[in-house]
Amino acid sequence: IIGNIVFWPNTKKTFLLILILAIIATTGCTEENSSDQPEKTTVVVSIPPQAEFVEKVGGEHVETIVMIPPGASPATYEPTSSQLKELSKAEIYVKVDSGLPFEKVWLEKIKDLNDDMLFVNSSKGIDLRPMGEGMDPHVWNDPNNAIIMVDNIYKALVEVDPSNEETYTQNRDSYTEELKSLDREIQETLENKSGNSFMVYHPAWGYFAERYDLNMVPIETEGKEASARQLSEVITFAKQENITIIFVQSQFSTQSAEAVAEEIDGKVVKVDPLARNYTDNMYKVTEAFREGLK
Image 1: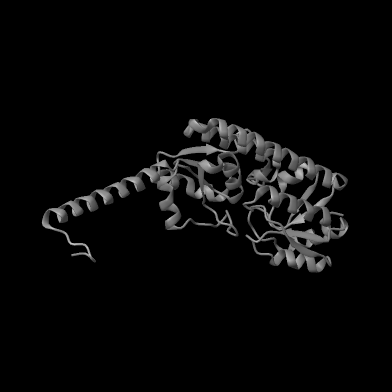
Image 2: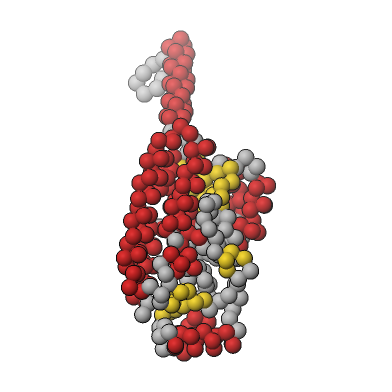
C-alpha cells in the first residue's frame, strides 16, 4: 500500500517497470542534453594578454588556461601541479616564443606532458628587437605586433577546429580593427611626445617606445638590480632630461625605483605590461605615459 493506493501483485510489478523506464528515460535525456553542448577547444597561453587574443578570436568556442597568473613574474614563476594537470586536456599551446624566461625553462617539460598539443609560435612574423645579450621578449606591448599574434592564433584555431572557421575569421577581422584603432589613438595621444625619454624599472616597454618614437631608460638591466654606480648614472640622466616619473610594475620590486624617485624629487607610477584585458589596459598605459612624459 502506498498512500491510499493499493497495489495487487501484478500491478506492483507494472509500477516497478514503469518506474525503471522513467529513470532510464530521464538519464537518457540528461545525456542527450549534455551531448548537445558544443565541445570547446582548450587553449593554453603563457601570459594573460594572450588570453584576450585567444578569446577575442575563439569566442564561445574556446576555453583558455593561463600559465602565468596576474601579478606573477615570467622570470620566476613555476606552474602549480593543478595547472600542469590541466594541460592534459588542451589541444593548443600558444607560445610567446620571443625569449620569455618562463618558456625557456618550462616549454620542453610541458611538451612531455601532452605530446598531442599543437604548439604555436604567436610571434612568428614579428621582428624581435635586441636587448642585452638576447632579444626583448615583450613583443605584445606594440599593438601592431599584437595583430600579428592574433593572426597566428587564428590560424591555429582553424587548423584544430575548421568547422568554426567562418566565426573565427569574423572575430579575427573585428578584433584586428579594434587593435588598429588602438594603435591610431596611441599615436595621436603621444604624437607631441616624440623623442622624449621615460624611465622604467624593468624594460618591458621597448617595443612600445620603438613604435611611438620614445626613448626607454631602464633601471634594471638583464634581470639584475642596478649597482650604486648605475643608480648614480640613472639619477644624473633623469635630472638632465627633466624626468620626474618612473614607471614600475607589480611583478618586480620597486625599491630601486623609489630610491631614484626620491633623488630626483619625482614619483613612481605603476603600469602593467601583463594585464589580461589588453586593449583597455593599453589605453590606461597610454594615458599614464601622456601624463608622465615631459
